[in-house]
Image (cartoon, rainbow, N blue to C red; front, side):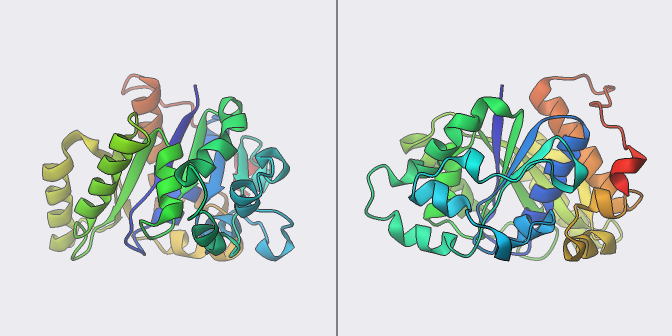
Length: 274
């Protein structure tokens, strides 16, 4: 059964797009058929997997506003990964916020757009914009779960209550089955007291929802988007790549009820990593 997961946090710079791109790529390497949906008008998840936004004829905007079929928009087998597809975004998506306002069932436009593909993938990973506007509302209405990246910096947990309140409102009004799938600590540095304190605070607040895997600061993670590649295809030996592979294993175990000793089927093929 397909699980749709929103990567959401209204704060910018917390690693949402990095997590969406690299988790999707890691799931694809684990041979889980995965669709990455870029729901951020900045389109960084789109360029982050090597798609040139300037050459796109259609994007998520066309599916949500004009009703174009998503299978006409998606880009398939990205980066040589046969299990990874993309629904791209362009700056046109900015206009969707305005154009949806007066439409009936405006919060369900994305859910309707994705419905025909729901049984074609094991996982659909959606990169949210850094806001709690109408696009994010659409993502939360379409999703089965939310993965919340939290940067291990000062004020990290500030604003999380606002996101949780939005999730609660979506549960009450549009999507009762929406769940918090997990909380991911990003930009973690075990040598820094602040990182350890944020991790402790997050675990106290969210308990077992916090992933055991924490993503550290890593220059390869920062460099990979400029080459249009997930970090797994840019430098598979980097600590950033290993962290997202570990996250994918943990994510799969949570969703597929695999035993802790199971490796989740993740094997790095050197050909794919080149």
